[in-house]
Length: 180
Image (cartoon, rainbow, N blue to C red; front, side, top):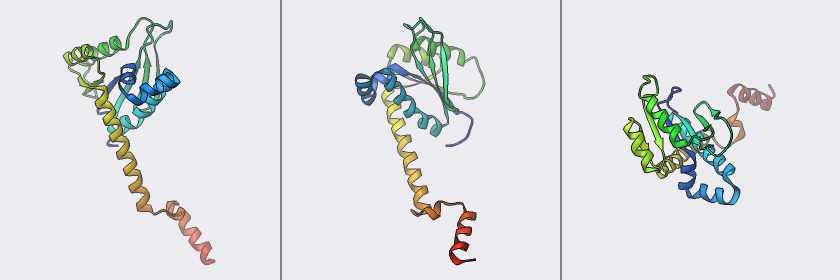
C-alpha cells in the first residue's frame, strides 16, 4: 500500500459486475444475490487498499421500499444501496456530475461497469471508465501481489515459530534455554 489518502474514487456498478464475472454469476445462481454481493465486496477490499482507492460498490434497491443506505466495510471500501426508485446508474452518474465541481482529493474518479450507455455518460463528466472484466483482472493481480508479498515476508523470517516472535521475547527464551 502506498499512502493513506485515496488516490482515486472508484464507483463499481455492483450488479453489473456480478453479471459480468463468471465466478460471481455461478455464486448468484447457486446461492443467491446476497452471497454474490458478499464475494464481490470481499474481492474488492484487498484491491481498494492495495491501490489506495476509495471504492464504493453501488447496488440498486429500486424495487425495494427502503431508503438509501451506506455501509463502510474498511476505510477504503463502502457499499451503497440506492433508495426506492433510484438505480445504481443514476447514483453513479449524479456522483460523476457533482465530482467535477469538487476540487478535493482524490483527483480521479473511475467507474467500473460494462454498461456502454453509462460509460459514455460518465466519461462525458470527466470520469475514467473501466470494464467489469478489466476490474476483475486488476482485482486478481492485486490479490496475487499481496500473496507474493506475504510469502516473501514469511520466507525472510524463516519457517520457525521462534523467528516470528518479538526480539525481546526471543532473547528471553534464549536465556531460559541457556539457564540464565
